[in-house]
Picture (cartoon, rainbow, N blue to C red):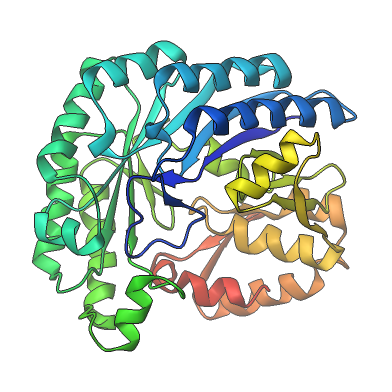
Length: 381
């Protein structure tokens, strides 16, 4: 089985005000002990699988994985190579907060086998970083990028956010220009989403979060496409842009519904051995996760066996996220025309509306439809 590997590190120096990921402040957490649990879970999972795994990608997400020292990251990479045949040319990504990086740490990560960095810049304005609850400064972000280049990283992505409190279109265009000037290989540029249960959600409900209006947000989205494509980046997924050959291989496996195995508190997994798929997640609480691993039990929760209808629907709304399009031929071969009848009828309707473009067996979002992609995806649910 080919499967990407995902490692979840749930700790941060401080939780950002907009974040609804499974993360919590480090506050004396036992990083070494948590990594030992990760390694033990990898051992348990490897022994429980009925077939060997070959892993083309390894992704450290969080939380703030760059709170793990290079030695610990290296131990996880070595275990992945041992238990899951991590390929020699595997894409190994580490998400990093610029405020946690030093030249020594970056050199250590590169020596340990990390070959792709995802730097959480989010903004080039100090006031917005503070409003978001970020722990780094603009200077630290710029220094981290420069130091990463000096450490030998030739595949760096940066994250930027728009539609932030009191942010204007001109400020967003300036942020994009600053990002392009750095010449990263990848840019994830996405709108702020106010998620339930976050401090931002409470502020929004109290009418204390002055966000740009819908029209202003749409103009920011259009500016993102304009400036980044003019800057030589390919708009390959709704919120993702990259230099040719630098697409995120790991995230691409999600959109293609390929198997992936998640390790750590709250990590999700998906095994697609039958065209339908089995999905599960680990216990979210780090303490509960560690206790389960210590007892020799893999902490699987919320196990879901997908139906044919669910698998077909996912194939469409995930596949259409990729702007190059979704090839219908393998779906027809796998599931049969009858199983795709409802989705094919929706494709025909959207094509007549000018929202989808059909070219041979491929279908993709029309340029004007990208900005309203979520409403289109909902029609395939």
